[in-house]
Length: 569
Image 1 (cartoon, rainbow, N blue to C red):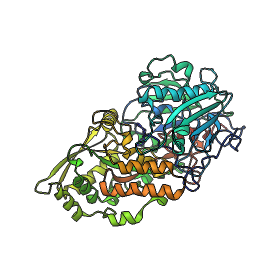
Image 2: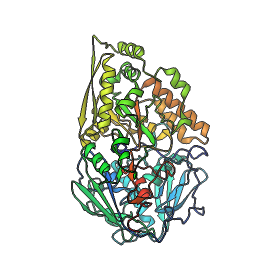
Image 3: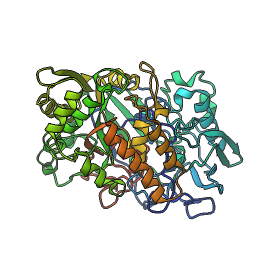
Image 4: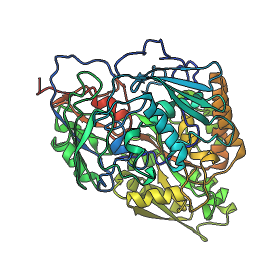
């Protein structure tokens, strides 16, 4: 089940300031370094024969619209399969060097205000046209011209201070990006998350925000062979730039409207790559075959987002009451059957980001475990009680069965303090619109992950991402405004040491506790099921070379480039 579709990331979300022990080293892979001409993935044996099919089963919540514009809302179907980024940065291995993709290397100037990429020669678009540095510059300048495409707000400096792009130019085989200030936190989005599109196609399509891209031309390892509402079929790009890749030749990606049919296809062996919640996964899936495997690392939070701009949840007492009343361990145990761990009110995912957790602040907050006494007292300050109950509607996505189960537990827990919860399941597109436009009292959502807690918290809390209710926001969906939090994000972005980063994040954690702008419930994992009946090369806990779910991008490309069929050999 897809949980981390990137709707629109916030300003300056990027690879955390590159200090050893915090994230990828800033100058690793600079031009002239060890990555200057390497393949994008460890080379598989040239003796391996091409063949095999990957069939993906994860609940999408809607049928396919067969539109592949990678700069709008179709990233999941386009990025990594058809379109590529400059580099790949693995959120699960934050100290690893970036993997070269369309760029072979990069370098910063001494003040980290200018970033230069060495663009890979010899790459062709899938229509045979030569790819160049000019395509890269064109893509970045296109999202400047059409700001609604700037899903990472690269051209806007954050409210709390920091950098924004001021120019992107191409010269020969180099692309130079200039920023208004130290821009190390931009690296993740600039290098890893921005798909590059062909100027010779896109310069002729008119307004690119309305471009459906039904016949996509990319540099990626696959092309679209056919598409219907029920299935996307990708086939290998015969002119792909990486030698001996891809090995698998076909991808079938059926559309599933609910978990059950997708789970059944995984359990029966009809599908070999899953990315969703499976109840009783060991008995339902793993035990069905020695070839069936699971590995789901926690990477972000599934949170209740209260609307802080209007309605009952604009009252701090209501938000505090909800946070105190939740027994997160029980929600994880019942709703997720223990397959996702309980979250905590700081918003720091553990154990993945233990180094950033302000454990003393959490333990003294009263939110470390359910506290019904404090919950009732907080609700009373807001004017509600069991004799004067509060009614709240919580929106979620149709087909997300574990979220539905979570919310049934939450409904019972909140009823005990006088909050009557109505759960409203919405179709994916309606849910996305309501989330972005602030059309909710409370909404359940799991944002995208990043190499440190900064990514998620910055997306969800920085007011630079805010818009008025009724206008689609690029983040901060609950419309939380706090200049001190904005400033803390700016301090993180400008940090030159691990301790400075930690201090900035601890400030944010304090406001997560004091203001309750988000209510983390469970930790969102990369749901991942895979079969080795025919395919080998999958990521695992022992070889975490990419986020493993089929809905994570651009990670999906790293997986597909390593898979090969045993029966084809």
